[in-house]
Length: 294
Length: 199
Image (cartoon, rainbow over all chains, first blue to last red; front, side, top):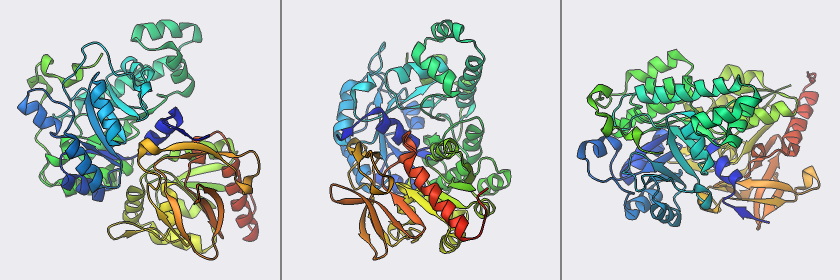
């Protein structure tokens, strides 16, 4: 019997992105540049996070016309973002045939208490997380892929590093716990007990784990791979840089060769000027996108 | 015996785990030096455009073609099948042309159309194999020396020409080791015919 939308199909698809770079694009032309540079997928949106941050207002799912135009422009998978908890936007993206949905804190949340029940969809979801508890809650809701939240649109890697290190540290703490302490561990981090047990057994998250939020240079991408990311999302970092084509190519190379400093030095040479970054101290706590999500 | 997994991009770890559970030493192949050490090579699933661009930039195209011509078994799964085919992948980028087939990318549609299904595969015998198709390609043309090993809905989804094996689906995402064992047997034969010991 033929089966679609199963967990094997969702999780298996996420595995195909590993060791790859997924790039935010706002036009079909940008999508083409991303594909030519070797992106494994593109994220279709109307404004990159740096512009959402600057312009303010309510940030929503992109217009279906734009998403369709981007889907027609490239042969690689196309992802798109929905607001946290916005089931209708997610159904629209599924109807459009988008390959992966990002339930994203970069857009303005639609629900201040609940995330989408992602098990009800045939299309796989990726969600952001700052720590192990948040990651496992999202997996419990059906997310087939996790990414760090970082702080999108800042070009500052510090928050993505913090989130990746937090998740990795919590996993290693969990690995050292006797089984009779797992329930209390699950309670303390607010995670589903059954998934905590799986993490202990595997020694890692049960789904693909990417870095996102603040990647602005090839070295940033390599750093996240060194810290254990399976791959990297780059949002504003490419198309807010002076030479997107070069930056995109260099970041793809950096993810492949993250463990070879000689190659990293070479690909970091000719990238043009990266996006201007933001110091976290200049962003008020209530303006931090990572605080969105529950 | 050492089997390499081409490690440009994709589900490398899943193939490594499968090799390990079959009791075979697997290594990640990113460089010409690593390629020289292996007796067989798996090209994993992932994005064919990305894998091809990266292997070209790493200078692996001609060493790979050389090893294939020398008889070393190579198996491409999904994107890997596209990479070893004769098809045009993107702009001026072509597959390695190791097997005389042409393929159609995303032949069943987008992710929403990805599926799993049981298919009988003669070469591994009963029971049917759980084939996982993820934005999968199919074979649209085969040369006269290519043997079609599996079909679904009239599409060729598995084939072999001499030392090159291809599958549209992902055996590495299952727990069924039969296709990996079949490839390992191809590598054993290659070693035996080249007078090398299987150690």
